Structures are given as C-alpha cells and as structure tokens.
Image (tube, rainbow, N blue to C red; front, side):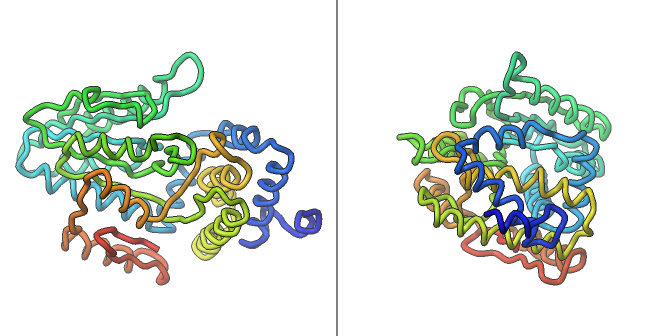
Length: 335
C-alpha cells in the first residue's frame, strides 16, 4: 500500500487517480474509520455553483443522465397528451436539473398544459430542519413552472423511501400518475441489512400506487456482495471503466476533479471501506432489479420506438463514438 501510495496521484492518469482513492478506502477499512471518512466526503460540499458547473460538464461529456432524462420526460409527455391533471411522484431528484427543460416543453404546447402535481420524496436532512432539502427543491420547481406558465402544485416528503405509504401521496381519481426513480435506488438497504428488504418494500409500494408508468434508472454494477475481495475486485473493475471514460471525454481540470470527488469517489470508498448498516451504496445490475420488479408484480413494457430512435441518434451525433445505447429485455442500456 505504501508503494501504491507513492506511485498514485489525484491528478495523474486514470489508473493513478483510481489507485489514489482506492488506497484511501483500504486504509479507512483497516483503521475502522470508513463511516467517518465517508461522512466527511459527503458533508464536504463545494459551492452549489461549482457543483452545477461540474454537472453541466459531465452531462455534456457522457450521455447517461441526459438519455435517462429524455426517456423519462418524453414518456411523461406521451401520457400527458390527453390529461387534465398529471401527478409525478419522484423518489430523489439530486439537483433537479432534469426539470427546467421539462416545464419549458409544456410551454410550447398548442393547448393549455395539464396541471402538474409533483410529489418529491427525499431522505430527511440531519439536524433541526429535516424538511430543508425538499422545501428548497419545491421553491426551485415552483419557480420554473411559473416561468413557463405551467399550472403546478408541489408536495415534499422528507422520509426514508421504504417508510412512505400510498396514503401519504394523496392520489386523485382524475390524475394520471407517473412514478420516477431516476437516481439513488442503489442507496436503499437490501436484505443483507434488514429481514424485510426496503428495496422490495419500495417496489411493492410502487405497485400499490398503480401508476400509468414507472420509470426506473440505475447504475448497472455488480459489486453489491458481502465478500470483501469479490466486492473490491468488482468495484475496481467498475470504476476503472468510469475513470477511463472520464479521461477520454474530459480535460484534466478542476471541474473533472469535482465530478470525480462528488459523483463517484464517496460511493466507491463507502463500498470498500464500510460494512453492515454503515455501507449505504449497494448497486445491482439491471437483471437483478428486473427480478425484484417481477417479484413485486411490476411488468416491463417496451420502450416507445420513436423515443428509442431519437435517443440513439442523439447519442450518435452528440457524444464520443464509443458510447453505445440499446434495448435489452425492455431496459434501455447505455454504455
């Protein structure tokens, strides 16, 4: 580890940077400080303007999130065509950069847009204001809806996802309901930490809602295993691909450092340095999530052919030639 530390660098090539951060994770595991290190990484947030700038660069350099947002938004538009009220229930929104273009699209409709009701479910903030995050999200969403003259109503719920009941969502009889979970389902605990898996309970709640569509986006990874060596090897393989991708599509500057240290490194360190309830990031493959969907009574539907054609053309024309998008078992796979 000492030799690797001397050779690695946070500003070197992809494998040097990856080694630098993974050694941090190994040292934290050996010292038993994984949870403490992860907490510091998560709490040590740069200015919001810097994060948004880094996210903008990331969205421009790789198509994963933009493809997902496009598919989600277009699916909602198709459902909303003949609706007067649309209820979007979204589990997690991060910084909400999906939604400005969503509201802008409705402003171009030739008829009055439907009333959009949005329920955002986020983990409660620590401290005396658990609702702080959902309140801030509501203010931003309301601003964008008003800017584009879209009738809008907001409800924020600060709660663990698995604790939210269908009755908490106040679903109207005349509403067309869409459930979105585009981020962070990998942070739901699974059956290794609880007798009744919160992941399965979350999906069963989605089934009880009976939405017109459930749009689920995940990071496809396989290192959610209780065996450390297997977990370490799979995580190393996964993040080496991520860092190679960033090397191929982004210049070596401060924005790329922000992307790596905020979007990827905390989760990587948490996966290799923490166990039990302290391990909060547990990614699974889309095949594993598919099995969970079927157990919960959720049936996959084909992706709209026009949406699929448009997103393939978009990725081909706007991104690096080695990015690839296709459909497998009714999942859109972007790699």
